[in-house]
Amino acid sequence: MLGHSHATSGALAWAGAAAALPLSILTFPVVTAGHISTVDLVMGTFLTAGAALLPDADHPNGTIAHVLGPVSHAACKVISQVSGGHRHATHSFAFVALVTIGTWAGEHWLHRWFTLGLVFFLLALAVRALNLCPPGHGISAYGTVVVLAAAGTFAMDQWISDKPTWLPFSVGLGALAHLAGDCLTDRGCRLFWPFQLRTCVPVIERTGNKVETWVLSPLFVLGTLALLWYTLVHHP
Ligand SMILES: [Zn+2]
Image: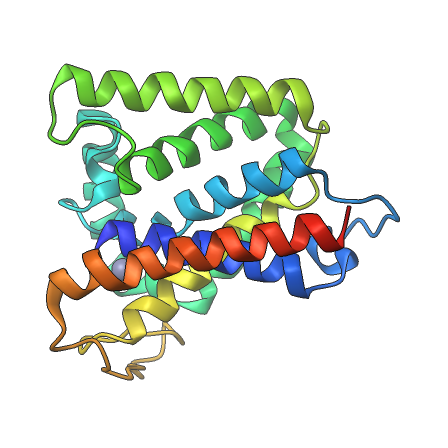
């Protein structure tokens, strides 16, 4: 699957969860009687979209490898080697658990710098994958990514609580949406890594990139907008 399909499916998963789930699940494990504000809802959409790129950190030529130039490229090469190559360890339930717990732990023990750093990185991924910046690897592309991600991080710093309780959920959900997407392709994923079992339901094997770009992604975006609108109207 392409980067933008993953990102839009992540956004859709977040919007769907926000519309369907009781608040206590979104804010697990800190069950409070508060409510998710509009800013939380919108930020969560972009952050989950970015998190939906995370499993491809094992791919030295994927969207995530190019998001921040040579730095992310080098990091992805290392992750690729450590995790056993493309679609191994980072495409499993174990990885989903790791990023969810890692985000929770980082928020609690490393505090605000961790949260804002993670937010910046995930927003940079979302900007890149959702094609909100010029294409290519020029200075205008990286510049736009950095400026938009910094603006979003600033908004997060201003308007969101110190430790957004929904952030671990958002990161885990994004990673899970990615796995679901990759399972629909003919290569599938080793969801139960380290076990060898490969899960795949190859329904988009023959459709190719055009269907993803012109049909799937636009549908995901429309679905996301509809669900966000529904949530805002029904949980004011
Ligand atoms: Zn993947």
